[in-house]
Image 1 (cartoon, rainbow, N blue to C red):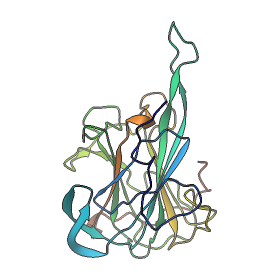
Image 2 (cartoon, one colour; image 1 turned 60 degrees about the vertical axis):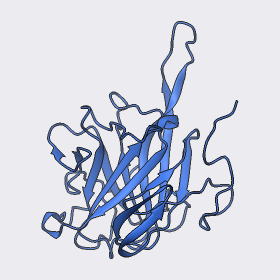
Image 3 (tube, one colour; image 1 turned 90 degrees about the vertical axis):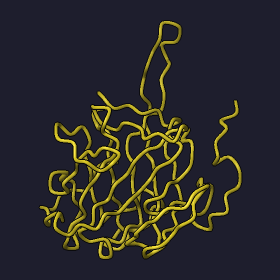
Length: 239
């Protein structure tokens, strides 16, 4: 069976190694790839500063606080049996992790992720159709221990245009500065941190088929007035 994945051919990314599937991503731009596997990883190249950044078929403006990041998408099996096939199901998107993030350079900034389908439409990631973006505010002071308090990180849903959506959060988020990176197993630190968005840990409501995801976007928004406080330390989240 042919997957018709844009990752199935060679990609001249220059990052990563081994047999990882690689592509380029920039803050505010997008990473391409159909996700047929349990863990898919993408190399990321970010241009620092304010300028016109070329990616894919277009050019967009972006402001980046880091020179290089990586995206890892975690998936798990979601059963969806039918009368014809009781074993039917799909791999749901469990989490999206932004790896190798420099929390010093990005202190106090808002970090946003979106999932884009094959029709260039934003995929709903919450309980209501308008929930298209997940956002956290990175700590203004450099954390020395892992954080898994979504409230302290000001986790929220946004519309595609950036308006905050109130209501119950199905998602959770975590910042990891100790342990090993989800992307490549490197040692985590404040300048090589993982920020993970768990779409719906209960798997009760939001179950996105990984093969529908063609792009993932990561953005930073500089808004110091809305910076997250330094949260109470928490244990390393289970991925």
